Length: 417
Length: 103
Image 1: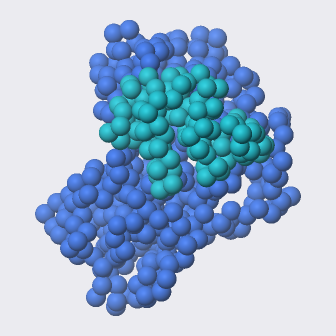
Image 2: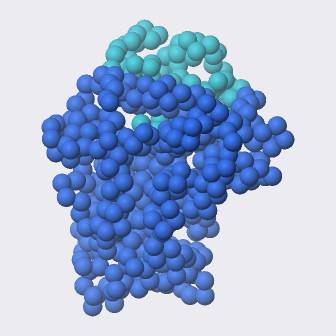
Image 3: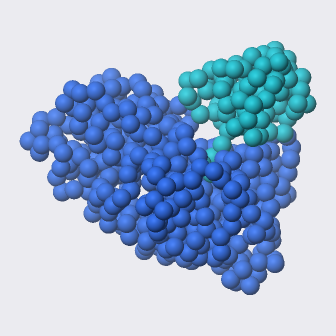
């Protein structure tokens, strides 16, 4: 009997368990999945919790429910991977593996920035990348009387790179609906050169910040938070004051990677961009936010990657060469407030394009253009996530590879109402 | 995409002036791009630039943090060398793509 071990039962790990179980003979392969937590969170929902659009129940379920019955689920903390011995040490237990899949994701590391986890943390400084942070921010916003709101990115890469911008857009709508938009100044602070860094997007979408009266502070690499003056300070001494700081702290892979000598300086695992095999060990594969591949750290990317990785695991265990096919395909909804959303479709090398999705010229979804239909698509996605995506059921008409049919590469500024 | 003559060499550049093909780069080009953004290059600048180019060839993502841990400069020194947007300007001078997000 051979052992395939999956570390992490988040979006990627759960999908891999569902994809692989029917493909590997029960009398030849035992599949084990390890995760220290009982709850599986619908992470895209963390964006909506602070604005009372979703409630707690809509974003969490018991993780085991999504794991096939012939896969062994171990709820324990992972201590260390011993790649030379093909072993994983858990709390009080050691697993042997023939093939290992690392799907341990990434998480926020606020302690990496001086002064972030200080007297103001969870009082006037919040994150919304954790369930707890998102709920604490919801409670804060319910009673907040207004002032200077900063939406701030510490450094790239981060999970779901568009979420901070969506947060700023939704905040604009939220305060408008509460009749207090005039009491709130919203500023978007980024270490990059702008809110939109791809020429296609800055051309098509630059109007959004202006329309929503959001101020932009670019090229701001935070050095520390001054808790006394309530300011964030960058390496050149530039200071931006806040009354409420919503920050996306440094994102890092799991510390197990550092302990096991498998990670880079942010604990992401060096991974082949096209096969998803780890660079250091041929029987270790990596998927989702845990990799260092230059794709977005997003569920849609993990979904497309899971299809390639499933094929490659089957090829690997049968001794065939791996498919070098993963193209970094991402397909993401972006909430723009006022019940509208954008949809973007791109990969490692192609910038987001215009056109219709998933059917050329028909849609019904529009790429890189605000529409009500895209917003309904984003809300419907929660059902798709729990009922199809996690279970490894293919989403009809949406391919692992980016399609170029009916897409428009000649980008003009555009606004849709 | 457009074409620009920098230090006597015709190179392909993006609309915001980043080189599209890093193999067209040379030190003279670096000096001319640097002077456009008001920086005079020293040996230390070139150490950083060479590091950025090596990492880009190795397809590794560049962050201010990783440059700060490179052993060449710390983050404050990086800012001193390339003021007001260190990664943005150092990338432009090094002839590598602009640091970007997905949109």
